[in-house]
Amino acid sequence: MSRLAVALAALALVLPQAAQATTLRAVGICGPERCLASTRPNLLRELAAVLDSNPPSKPRPPDAEFYLVDMLSSKGGVLGKAAFLPESSLLYWRPHAGDERWIALSSNAAALMRAGSAGAAPYEPPLAPVLGIAPATTSNSGGTPWWLAVAGAVVLAALAAGAFLIVRRQRARARHSVSSAASRSG
Image 1 (cartoon, rainbow, N blue to C red):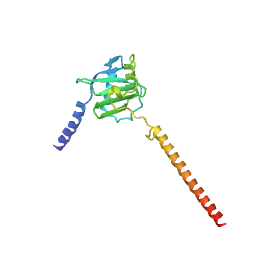
Image 2: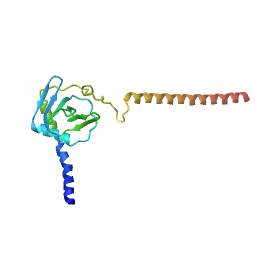
Image 3: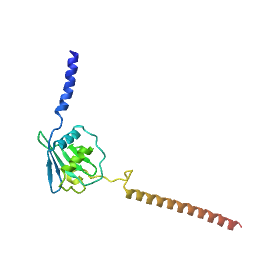
Image 4: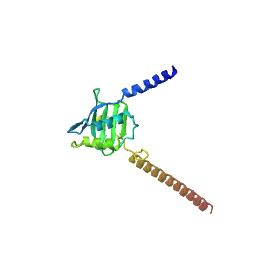
């Protein structure tokens, strides 16, 4: 009896996962002037596999040319907001608010996406206003803007120069008071 319960529990865990598998009906790959729809089974399978694998997000890439992507479910509706960056082979996907992902596509999936976009010019950067996402931040290795680093260096140089002048002035006063004392006593 316990073996049957374990088998049923295992089956219950597997069935919801299979029921949740994404089945795409079509993919629209759009530039600013033209949208191309694809129902190519190999493209739909590749994208469904990416979505179902729940891949971790990559860091946001620098702004580059992109296509908007509409992934239409066989159950009806669009599966979140998406964009394809052909230069970096990344798919931006936001299945729901607050869950933004930058997914590295396999070379096969990226090639299929490029083929699906043939004939449509991509959008020019930036991506943020078109998709309604936060603008990309630019950073220098440590995350500090270059102008802030320059301003800090200027402040440090001014402080060092001020300290040098104060020390020099104090030494000059000390020499002057020593020479004044010597001339008064002598």
